[in-house]
Length: 171
Image 1 (cartoon, rainbow, N blue to C red):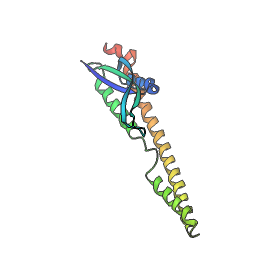
Image 2: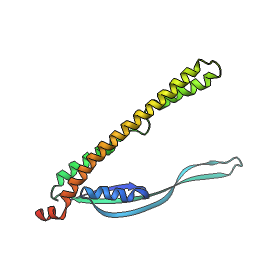
Image 3: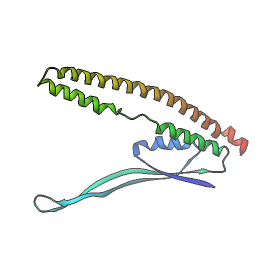
């Protein structure tokens, strides 16, 4: 019995997406490149002429299939779920403190023109912003190191499961 999954990816991510699915026993079944336009708006311009705005799109639709009766199927599904959980746990690009520290810095700089006391607030805001940026950078680097290590173990196990020698054992 086959299971099927279709994903839409940007042309730049097609190879990466295909490799990811192959790791977990999926085989590329179909590939379709999609180009088109959709109406994004319409109206009347200042001269009274009607107009229509279009938005272009371009993506690749990949359909993968995997045999549910293949050896180690359940383990591959578990490994794929672990992989997806690791990818989903990617830290946000900017921490929630960025807008706050930036606002404090701007308030301090603007306020400095009215009262020199605000210079302290500006320095504090800039200092907090730099501190938050460094902490976020450290946290992201640590996450990346841990994630890379975990993903490497997952990929190695998938390679072992899908290796020709292992498949001959069950084939």
